[in-house]
Length: 245
Image 1 (cartoon, helix red, strand yellow):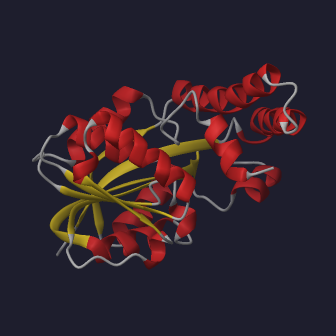
Image 2: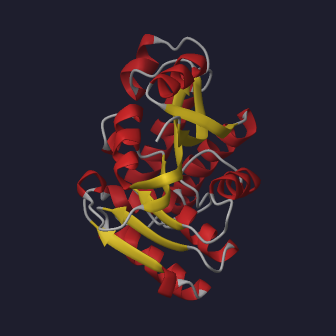
Image 3: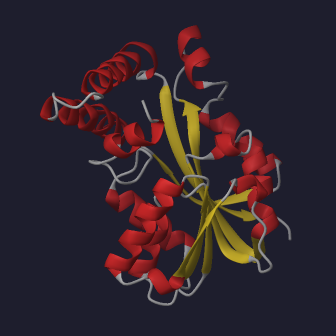
């Protein structure tokens, strides 16, 4: 099964590929783009949902997105044209960790993509290389809301609790100027959309050769979520500035 196909289908009902609702996304972008005319970079942009929302809300913002998926970037380009913002959006198909720009950015985003850099702090190091003085980083990642099971750690990775995570960020030279902790409703809504969109597609397309496999993927993911990590997994999004330039 093509992983990009699964990803596209699973996000059909939740265009932001992270557990945040529309109001949370709007607040975070407002705090990140406080002037409204910034140059914005998204490292690991996927379908560029964050950038498209920023461009639609701010007519003088310009943006660049980096992702290694041609399929995601093609969809982003199409949606940018439909919104009439394609002239202010540049998309780059390459590894986000290898992206180089001749000009710095006022804001750098990386939400749910820290795996591309090897973790949260390496992601901040990568963002800093692109950041103009006084700029802001918008980063989103997981944390353990409560002590996870061994199975949850093995499945999702070695995260820390929220306080420890923020302490590490501050110790690495960053100061949070805003933040959001995904609510239980946001977390559950994201998972139900992910599994439900896949399951609905499979049930609606029983003749498709991928139908049975997609239904199995939805069922397996739902079981892992409910039985393994739902009670311990959390997600935070922080707006950060360098403590000293």
